[in-house]
Length: 193
Picture 1 (cartoon, rainbow, N blue to C red):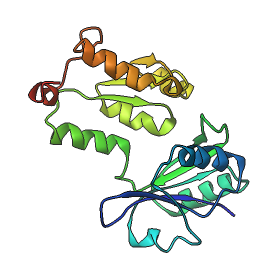
Picture 2 (cartoon, one colour; picture 1 turned 120 degrees about the horizontal axis):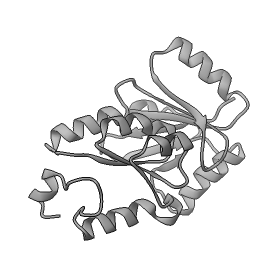
Picture 3 (cartoon, rainbow, N blue to C red; picture 1 turned 45 degrees about the vertical axis):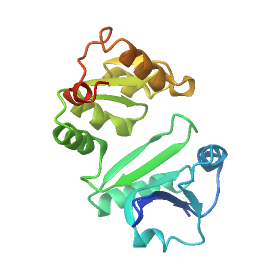
């Protein structure tokens, strides 16, 4: 009785999000907001057969009476990464499932090596960002983030509803990092950013 959102990458390297409809208030807020902003990734389907022909990035469920039960059953059966928490936007439970190695922490570590970056700055709002914070040199939580995320952050910036990350980046690059406890990464120097 759950209605998942399946995040994939297709053969053309396009990101897609497949869903079967909107069945609760949390999905109405989450999916509705993305559709209102013309997010081209979101595609309504009758079944998930098309998703199973693509690389699945993650599976997420919002709300629903069976969510905790599904979380406990899946966690006991499959060795995957699970984030089960209250969503800060819809105020209902959110379950996100990924492969053990498909997580933000591993992605940050890979990018740091790949870009030969001296330092990594990251931004987050929910519990699934905590591992990424561990792998980053500096981490910033938006004002409307989960309280544990704010406690783990280097600092708290304006909410993402008020374009906190964009404002931070604009100010950071305008001042070339002088007013923040970090240096421009080597990749930035190479690109004259």
